[in-house]
Amino acid sequence: MNNEFVLFSGSSNRQLAEEIALYLKVKLGKVELHKFADGETYVNYDETVRGKDIYILQSTCFPQNDNLMELLIMIDAAKRAAAQRITCVIPYYGYGKQDRKTNDREPITAKLVANLIQAAGADAVLTMDLHADQIQGFFDILADFLYASGPMTKYFAQKGLKDLIMIAPDVGSTKRARKYAKILGTELAIIDKRRPRPNQSEVVNLIGEVAGKTAVIVDDEINTGGTTVNAAQAAIKNGAKEVYVMASHGVFAGDALKRIDKIPIKEVIVTNSIPLAGKLSKKVKVISVAQLFGDAIRCMHENKSLSQILKS
Ligand code: R5P
Image 1 (tube, helix red, strand yellow):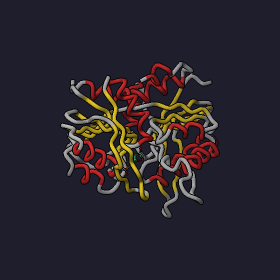
Image 2 (tube, helix red, strand yellow):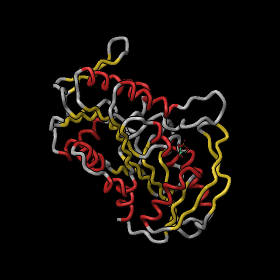
Image 3 (cartoon, helix red, strand yellow):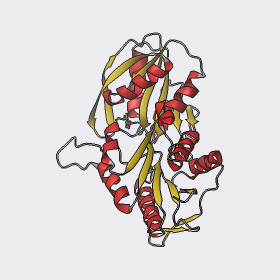
Image 4 (tube, protein in one colour):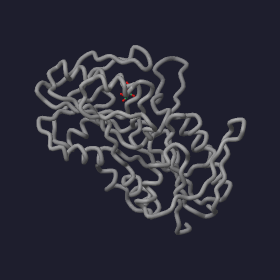
């Protein structure tokens, strides 16, 4: 393979792409991205990609359909321009929540998106904290999966807080919360959450002893904020002395931040997998995953083991 690699950025999270490029001491590749008058996406690489190992960074966050389509078109353009290997770097994998059928005649969009990426011509995917680990099996191309637990727990440990307990806000988050509990050396509590309908959730039961403790809710994402708010309220009701939240992806749809601001949560820690784009709250602390992705890209390009990066 040609010894160079080039990192290109889609429109969704240029700030993170720039941070990664800075960390890797490379310049972002030049690519023209714009919309035709009728709204269709136009892509043109302004430098050669022939024979190169290229990385396209695109979070498929809001506006999901535009960002996904732009990614597919960027893959197509790179393929037709003879890039040797195309890796999609997707810090936030949108459409991941529909990863199985919960009702008859529903789609499995997490699989559909994987199919689309593959059909467009991608050779590999690098992503972080999928909604559910089983989505890993939806890819038939090379795929590597990163976890925000390293940078998140490193930041949290610096606080030096005592009497901590990690809370999984639903059964699906148990594995993630247990991992955080292991890294930070804390206990674990689990919430039995029900979803009567999409975008609505309710706490049925909290299993674990949170009274007098600093509770830390660990989740993959905050979307409407319903899960976070309900879990925080349950922790407070059960005697937690304060509540923190660590969620890998800050989606913050609609009034999520307003809802969170009304609840006595001390801090909400998210990564920069999705740009906050003007959604402000003094409670939100953003941890950068630029180094994590930068290290992974370097390992992939040099064909070196990613296991050290994947451990935390
Ligand atoms: C499970 O549903 C997920 O792990 C998250 O808890 C969920 O996506 C958060 O969504 P929301 O903020 O809308 O409750």
